[in-house]
Amino acid sequence: MLDSFKTRLTPGRSLGLVPDLAELGNSLDGELFSPGSPGYEAIRRPVNPAYREARPRLVVLCRSVSDVTRAVTYAAATGDRVAPRGGGHCFAGRSSTDGIVLDMSGLDGISVAGDRTATVRAGARLGQAYAALHARGRTLPAGCGPTVGITGLTLGGGIGLLGRKYGLTCDRLVGAQVVLADGSVVDCDHDHEPDLFWGLRGAGGGQFGVVTSLRFATVPEPMTTRIEAHWPQSALGELVSAWQAWAPDAPDDLTVNLTLVSEPGAPVRATLVGAAALGEGPTRELLRELADRTGVAPAIELRAGLPFHHLKQALADPDPPGRVLRIRSEFFSRSMARCTIASLLTRLGEPRITGRRRLTFTAMGGAYNRVAEDATAFAHRGERFLLEHIADAADPWVDGSWATAHPDGSGRVYPNFPDPELGDSAGAYHAGNYPRLAAVKTAYDPHRFFDFPQAI
Image (tube, rainbow, N blue to C red):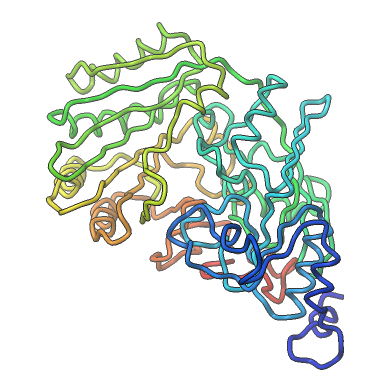
């Protein structure tokens, strides 16, 4: 059936089957935008400023599943590439295209059933999801950015401050609705379309179809303690060494991530930010253990008694809006050598004219690693931490810093942090799960309608 569909809708065939653009617009529950139409300039731009110059031929603001199926059918007929957009934060610009953007923001409903299963439509953002779940005393282990789309986050894994206790966002996924390349709509879970469901949990967005809703097994919203601590520059080497040995093995209720920031003319700043589902006393004792390993007593600020929803609101984005960044990252399954740390710190502080540089260490371990590597599409189940190198897009430091750390890395890369510079992207993103993912791709999208650089 799919083969005949693709034959009927091959671009350029004069069979009278290519739908009229006006007919598409009139059939939608949402809205259609094209260059020159009112609202186009605002809706075409993703959140990520690196891709704000992309000018899609069309943007479809989807307000129903039917809108998605109509847009996919139209794109198949015209030969346009389709890019679903949940939040528009993708590091590699995969939610932008010169073809057709499916803006899912009109599909943003969230409901919670009596069994505490949440149904989240594809356009919901993290801030909306946390607020809706907070009203029911529930939450999900997910990220911090309130404007990040929950769908893209889930499809690529989903790392966050509750992950060491509850796992990835995709580990809480129990079902999904997907529009396939032939315009059909399928519901998948462990028992229905299980291979597709397996692939949706961690392979990355836009691989097999357009997800229109997700169903999650929620968790109780914990009371948390917000952690912020500052170390002096003189202790940076000891701090990184101590953190990478301590943070991945800390109790599951504690997540502490480390950020090193370098700005022109200023000393490198070291900040620990995290959360604990523990009282202030136990949290302080655990941080004291880290301080003892570094031999330095840092300035520590704890704010206890915060519902997780409120904690998320207190974690601001460290970068100003509109800043064009470049990010490279890698997982580490073992601690970096001291000489590697020393070289990283030297590079981080090297002189330059402008621009902030940042190294961000995110603790893994805990529940992340208690899932088998092949149980979901997310293959990175034996990692201790994730290291990001972040700076202005034109700063060559990003590549140099990444190359310095890479010999100690695992060669694995978080699918939600796509890196266009990777050589073996299939191995880096998917490791041993790639052959099965390739089979799922062949089964559900044999003609590669959903395609982009580094796609399965």
